[in-house]
Length: 317
Image (tube, rainbow, N blue to C red):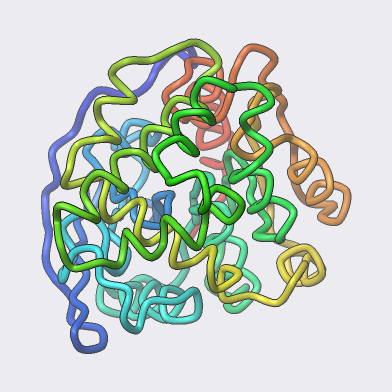
């Protein structure tokens, strides 16, 4: 297949639900070659969920493609649940799913928050990882969270004005606390508008060029609430990691081949983090896409991810 487009849309050939820890049950599905090299796709957010389009980065004749919705996200239940929802539990869920599917080792592929979770998983279980493919690197440091809340507006002032303008003026000094209180409110009349405002802010900052379809997709009520509530929950709790932990533990990645595909103009997760990670991880290839922002749907980023998976066809399970 030419390396200038994604693979065609592909239906799942198997799916199921895995009970992990009450009250959580995670949804999973797989497609592609049943005997192929396994690849674990980790969605962003946390809370964004997976979709059929996420399979299009992988050659279905070569890869056994596994997607799952993390706790509280997508088709996992209960949706938007923050109880017993933290980074260490998500890592344990990935391991439970790997064992459930009878997979020994797999390539782990993640973007944005998915890149963070992929790194944390690989550092905890390096023996289970064939390779890592990352996009829009987020290292979960407080400065990166602060940038999301206060810095992106330097490039997207209209989006930031709407994000802060949703709140009463007295609460705009600490938008995370103000949004989190609303997002955790059980009343849909309170949490619904807050989720839409939060998700619209992120969506409008995620692409180099305005993308109405992307904004509409992330602001649908079934997507906006888990995305916004879980992101705020993780941000309030400092992503359930020690400050700088993912970069400090980069030596655990040594020997694991890696690829980072990073938009040069990624405002949500600026390239500095990807550059720092690449400097600490000698086995990774960093590709900076000159005409892209944060979203995996941008052509240069999408093709860069496909090309990384094509290169890794030389790696066996």
